[in-house]
Image (cartoon, rainbow, N blue to C red; front, top):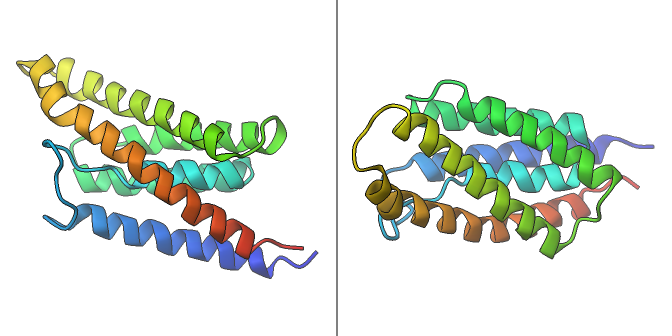
Length: 169
């Protein structure tokens, strides 16, 4: 089997991740909606993991996590560890047990994005002892979660197209 399309596909995923990191970290490029901006690298890692096997999915999750950790600077290793583990498990589940469909991908993305962002809030806001946690969550994190889930729909179709266009036959 010829593996040249696999290398090209992984290179395309890498470019996508770098582009999304630049877009996400550019001030005032992506507008805030109700106080929150999307975390574009989380749905990118998840949608790549739906189509790739466990090990490549894990490495793309780790790459997205490292960039998210560098982008925020105050949470060393959180996104790297959590996205690496989640993408490994997703790659395993979707390559062996489930069929990748729009409904499955959207449901998994919504649950995982909500869980990852809420855990981040719990660890780095509530456990840090910052005040008025409930109001801060409502004004910043709820919109960030919804905005990120909506972006995951677009990234699903992008990565599905990349995977199908560069599939090894």
